[in-house]
Image 1 (cartoon, rainbow, N blue to C red):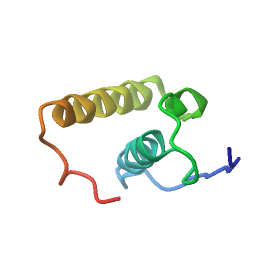
Image 2 (image 1 turned 90 degrees about the vertical axis):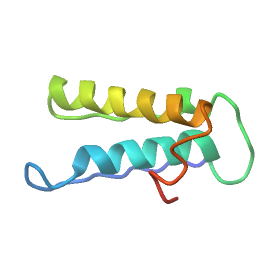
Image 3 (image 1 turned 30 degrees about the horizontal axis):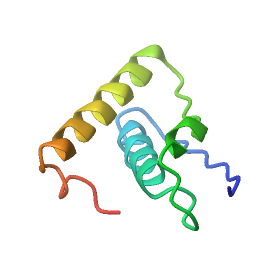
Length: 79
């Protein structure tokens, strides 16, 4: 398992939460790029500055996963 740290810094409304969600989903679905590990999402830590941003991130991740389960949403995020 590769250990990387990515920090996103930018002003309000610039898309940090969108970027975090996109990267979280990419990493959760693809693992570390070497081996498929079905529970890789348990090894991801995403930290936001506010509870509001964390809640929004959670809702977006769950919404995307729900869309995928219905066969929708593949075009939402380009990996």
